[in-house]
Length: 127
View 1 (cartoon, one colour):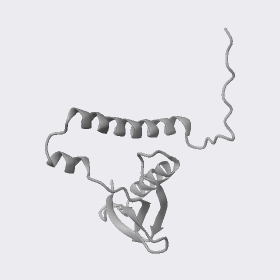
View 2 (view 1 turned 30 degrees about the horizontal axis):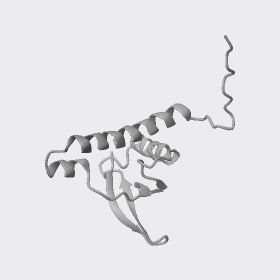
View 3 (view 1 turned 135 degrees about the horizontal axis):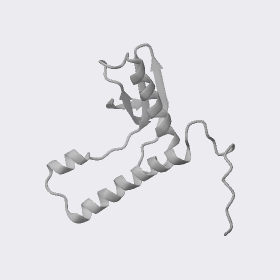
View 4 (view 1 turned 45 degrees about the vertical axis):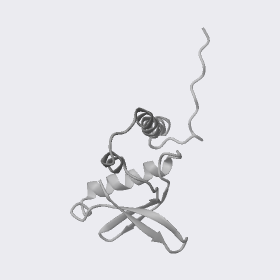
């Protein structure tokens, strides 16, 4: 849903990724809400397979998620080099499964408006 660019954070002297909404949808209120929600959800996750979110910048007519730059080839680039071995396929599957599991667990454990401080687990039932 966005366009990603490599950029340089001049204040912190590090390379980052910038995700922007495409120009043709950047002014649609529902897209802006979804984009902000995406930044909030990703910022709430802490997993080695998910890029860290450094910030959400919003200005007149544009929004940008500033996030960790993760270098390496994409799956599409890897497939252009030829077939993937079974061992590499299993490694990739574990990587993506771990990332998806982290996202699903975070959604289950952190529904909107619920914080750990206010949540009390139900009592255990004895049989």
